[in-house]
Length: 451
Image (tube, rainbow, N blue to C red; front, side):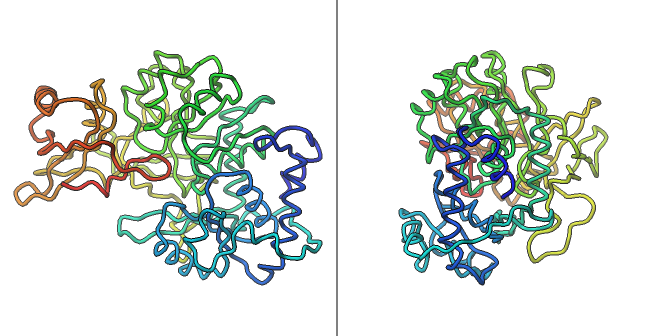
């Protein structure tokens, strides 16, 4: 962990994670590694199951320093799903927080770590680019997860490109509210470490706590998904924020327009686990005429549009030093990575994302882009959340159905959509819910919505 060692030497008293300084975290990591080493001496790969915490970061850094590949497990998975992922990767040891030990029968919890007799160990300071640091599992269209090996080269290239794009200042303090077992949360920790800045880790979304930290000026940077930002946008003090990194799912255009009016420094971004977070980004306040875009490529990233139609809309492919070479156990994908998304580039190189290819609804030969209809529905002030998904249909192949959360009558919503949409785009049914199902990052789980 050369970055941690370097920052502890250069900035020993500077806060790194919450109230702990670089020197303190470095000391805790070394002490933790001494306790962990005898438990996993002959294991090259281990797993970590934990909610957000400074202790999670310390354990992760210690495992990485011991040159282990660390599978980061989603805390929301069932015991069966966790066992499936652990067994698939032939992992013998899972480290968990005390509150999650019941999910893994033979795990080693954080509290049990301290029962070992410590002995001096030597932590690896540097790693070759091809060395796997962490593994994250992503869902696939087949339902079977895929394992993404995130290498030190991917991490190193990301933090450098992100610094060039987002900048880094001495008083920067990221709020880590998105899960650290996801790329969105982990990338913040790695950027903070590389930039010698600060991060404040919280274990869950608490609106009052979040607003207090932002509006008091304690933190000035935050990464959110649209569903969370929608809840607090009107209550934020723009003067205390340097940036809000916004991505993770399709971003409703009405939300972006509202943030633009409020002067909020929204950096729209597009990326994925396979590319270790961001591939493109931009500040909407700097480019007010591009707010429908998701941004321009980060340094070193190339975007290709393949199989484009006459309007230039086609498949989005990536080339990037932040990209994995292949999923674990699978063949390398080649010179460019197919994202599975549909979009186009404008003359200035800004990328516009129309939809996930798998979410596009083809009804009677007509392509229906859910994002178009969802943006329209979100323009109604009564709507909190919405999602348009496909339902199999004997006559048309597929038809669109809409799920919404909000205080609006079905008649008003249906009349609005009838006025605004061509007949083939109109939802065949509308289902009202208290809230739509989401994953740990706040993304709406479309696969759980059925007619």
